[in-house]
Image 1 (spheres, rainbow, N blue to C red):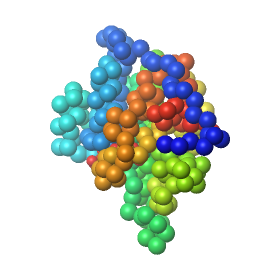
Image 2: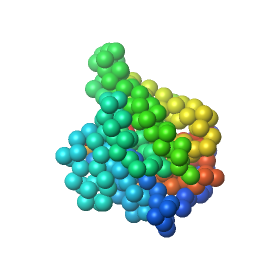
Image 3: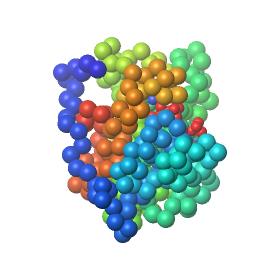
Image 4: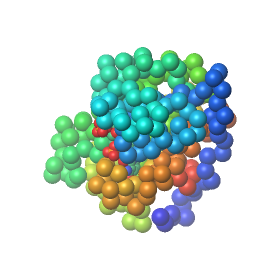
Amino acid sequence: MLRPASIRVVPAVPTLRRAAAPTLEHMTTTLITGANRSLGLETARRLIDAGHTVYAGMRDPATGDDARELGAHVVRLDVGDEQSVASAIAELPALDVLVNNAGVLGTSYGVDDLDADAITAVLDTNVVGVVRVTQAALPLLRRSENPVIVNVASGVGWPRWLTDPSHDEFPVKAVPYAASKAALVALTVQYAKNLPQMRVNASDPGYTATDFNGHSGHQTITEGTDATVALAQLGADGPTGEFHNRDGRIDF
Ligand SMILES: NC(=O)c1ccc[n+]([C@@H]2O[C@H](COP(=O)([O-])OP(=O)(O)OC[C@H]3O[C@@H](n4cnc5c(N)ncnc54)[C@H](OP(=O)(O)O)[C@@H]3O)[C@@H](O)[C@H]2O)c1
């Protein structure tokens, strides 16, 4: 993808956490929301390969066979339901890495089909849902030696790319989805400021073939999880409050 000269993309994530050779004492425990399919499932696969113990959150555990086959622990988790979130977090023995991946596009693609209910539904999953899960997870994360949060945002939430015809994001006209992902990037920066002891970053998967877009994306799911997986493996000296795609940091 072409990048305008004014947008600096710096080399990818510098440090990795110690998950490659876990010991029983230092096993990395990871929760991924929306991990039954697509990017969430691929993130689970790759982090299990990297040595993480993965809890795969999903609305319906009956859809969890692929995650179970990978060796993930399936946990019922609807990010739109406070009680479901509380029950899911209560099932975890510990938590080092939280990947807020679950997201929806919504039912509005322009302004003629847009109303308050349409944007409220998208914000409730993509923004409020992240807050529900993160707030519930904080007590466990605070007990971790190396707590990490990755919020799966999107270049569609990045105004420079929404306004640049050379970017994949430019043709997208949906108001709720773009607004939700822009909010998620700002939310990430603010969480990072509030939690200096944690690594809190946002990822942009890039345009990736999944159910989300009828498999029209030009990236594979492995390419689409590169940034999320790298950020999930940050060491304590890694960056925080940043936004990364698979090419590295997207300069604010
Ligand atoms: N694909 C792309 O090109 C692309 C690009 C940029 C960013 N992203 C972001 O990447 C993330 C994953 O996208 P994807 O392509 O994998 O999408 P997807 O194929 O539509 O999968 C979405 C996942 O989110 C889950 N989910 C939706 N609402 C939920 C809720 N209330 N509680 C729990 N889980 C919920 C879905 O669960 P169900 O199976 O129950 O519906 C599913 O597991 C999203 O945040 C998306 O915005 C994707």
